Image (cartoon, rainbow, N blue to C red; front, side, top):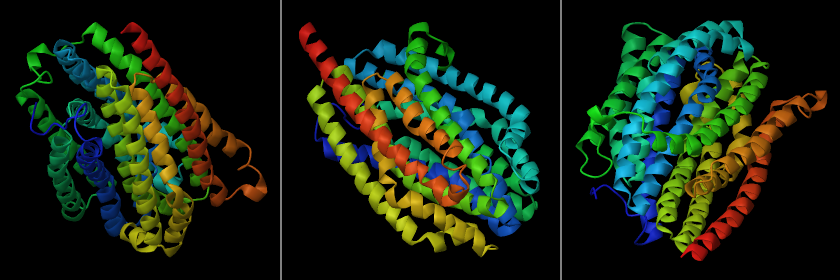
Length: 454
């Protein structure tokens, strides 16, 4: 086992979970810094309109990318369960299926993203003073999306094996390069959003190359041989079986956010600017909480493969408590520092900053609800159930938010930003309670079934 791998099936759980999760948190923060650097640089050198242009692309990018990122969840669960059961050959086949799957995913995203970016933005009612810049940013971003797919699929393999430190180190290198290139392209070559998009693509190429080199140098079942890359039918089917519902869930989740973004767009570019900056800041809280989703998924996957049901219950308790603490503390800190944080992104519109503060008031102060919901999703996927969290999320998050927008929000007295934002915490709470109930029922049934077999 690599020295960087964290033991998941044995040893002290709390310590191992913390050691495993902290690098994921920092990795996610660095990924967000890609977009944050884009917003900050264009905000300071090109103004709030450029901030709005980059921000307007987020919901659409997530909608398209999440479907394929879901497949990386399938990769992670398949590798983790294979390691837990000791099936090295199955793990190797999964690795050599995952990398070409990442490449194909990237090619599809490039074709769709470059071709239809402008049309998607029109559907979202993106204002005329923003849409052309947003289109340019999206087209460049999607032109290099294959590197992003390779990094995410490769990182999923490493994390399933217990290595969360390597992806962090690779993103540190890529993040530094991204910031340098952002400033260089915008200040030296006088570029606008196209400069920061190009910087993001180049930095993602670096992180993708590093993760592939890591996989090729490994000494365990996760070692990658380029000549052996091909689609193995049984592994591909399992990846799709687990990953496709996760991808659909992420995309449908994004659809509700696209609809909400369209509603935000209807208030104009100043509101869009404040909303975009606020979302980016909130992202640092979200990614810290979502790291426990990945921890839940992989720790549960390995222990489920090994039949350690008692340990799975402890994993649930530790991750729920941890994500609550992280979400509550970070969410409140971000809200209390909202004005100075937003000023980092926006320096030409106090009104836009005020709109950003309004969003944070309704999202950040109770953001821990989103965190505990995501932990339950990870626990369900870890035991091999990807369909149930997808269905629950469709109804609890997507259905509730869309229903809210087309009913409550349409009433003149509730057609406000405050009414729009309150739909978030309500949907998180409902979804968490349902997922927790379903997980406990499913775990009990599967434990009894295994006991009957043994």
